Amino acid sequence: MAEALASSNRTFDPLADPLATEFGAHRWLSSEREEAYSDWFGWILEQIGDSGRILRLLGVRDGKLLQACASEKPLINREFKIPDGRPDLVVEFGKRLLVIVEIKTKSFGRVAVRDQLTRYARWVPDPRNPPQQTLRYFAAVEFGEFDCPSMFEPLPWRELTLRMREQAREWIRASKNQPPDRNDLIRAAMTLAFCGAVEQNLLGLSGKPVLFRTRSSAEYLEEW
Image 1 (cartoon, rainbow, N blue to C red):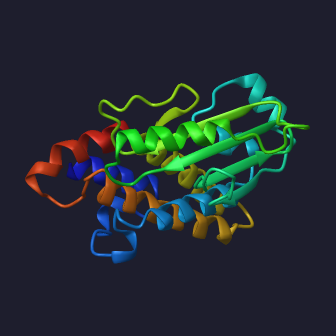
Image 2: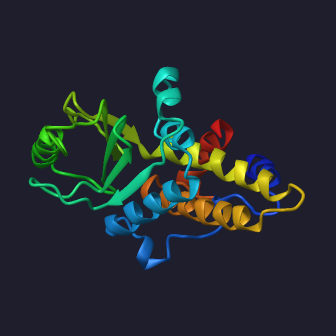
């Protein structure tokens, strides 16, 4: 565990691996505050700004779709009001693509959430001029036996934090260019802080030598 953490610290120099900082004591970052997590995640997407990077962060690997959206300026909407509710995030890529992300940070009622996602899947922003394609994601810690509606793709928080770590590392590298972009270092620090909150409060990981967390945390860092 210590070796993996030290290696990760070197990767994030001059910052450090977020598991080395305690985020569990921060009430604003408790698992009950879903709005805080969705707002912060939305802010990170805004800071990325690039369509391709945002889509890759969400797990999109379709080269044609990435290329089609490359010239589009992403518009991130938080708690977007629609007739049947308020999806946590709605990202518009012009008329080429619409992305809906619903976020859960704690256990959820399977029947209620399935109904919620089904209602969101029926929504079309402008029936007369709909987007060419729509992607829908449901972010959660564990899915267990939850039967996610076919219109939505499960998006594990673990995958998201690993990808956000990559984005933070890209910003750190950019901050070391000449002249250095110090805004990128701030973005990296804020993104790593968010990763730390998710990893510790939602995924149950820690950089502290607590017996029941050591193995899972070490495996996570090794994967990273």
